[in-house]
Image (cartoon, rainbow, N blue to C red; front, top):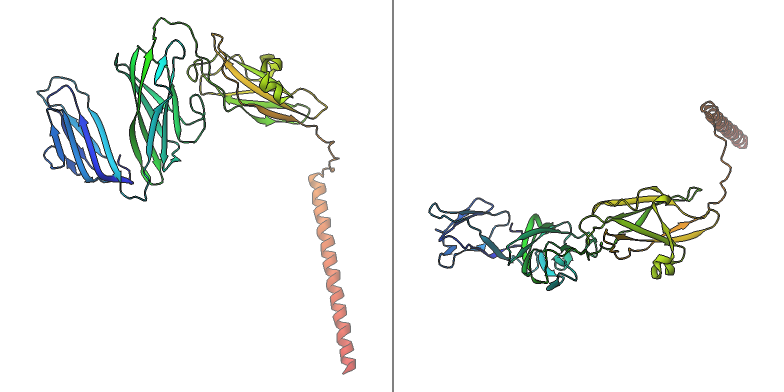
Length: 392
């Protein structure tokens, strides 16, 4: 995809490795095709590189077709790289900057690495893009696909900031791992969409052991803990919701949740375990011991303590895995319990028949008043007319 902001000095480069020759043909959105016979094409069979140089590439979807000639006997992988310049200095095309959370991963201490991609247009975030990371071990050749998300969960910190994130956990050996990021999305200047591919870099894995059975990764922090319903009547019902985290960071399924509350904000924040706990027996809806898979919506309902006094209660939660690893504490949610004022005496309701009589009565009174005013105005007019006649 060549988006509308790009197209000038476009260079498409294709490389291969196994066979003596791979033929390539590219076709633009208007159906015009280019192959090795066109002056825009430069094929170097000794280096196994084919390059198409297009001065002004049409915006839209380009089709690329590779052919493995009959005399070639090896399966082939072809690498594609496309570079295109903006059409105007006043137009800012979408840009992707990808990077890693660490360059060296010690498998025995923290067997995970964060992958990030900042998708932006002139540093304004591009949201709702599809971002996919590909992690490949240069030692074993194993390749893993991971989706990167901008939802404020797991490795991602802030929703909608254009930074898409994910943890990578599927290590297969020591050695170097390369990370590539592919992005598909739309902006106001790329109504037909855009595609970008970047390299996030390389990280090194040390002390890997396939026999390491110790679970050292705790669940991620719950970051969207909130209340969605409160009733201030005698039921004192409150509903809390959040997104489930995983067994290992944001992957898998955690074992349980630990929920505490207090009317003292500082005490809850600084000494969580000293505050009151809520268990499954306190819940009217939901469960703290039956956890949904990562990314699912969790919801519980229970009664607030106290009946006759106004109060503000603070709640905080964290997830545990089956190995006894506790995740970080969530954000704190405040819920107020307020005493309702005495209800006023409700007006006596009227039956349908009584309501009809009431309406008829109002209409009759209105008609009577109207006729009285009309009669009065006629009488006054007659009197004034007689006075004028006598005077003349």
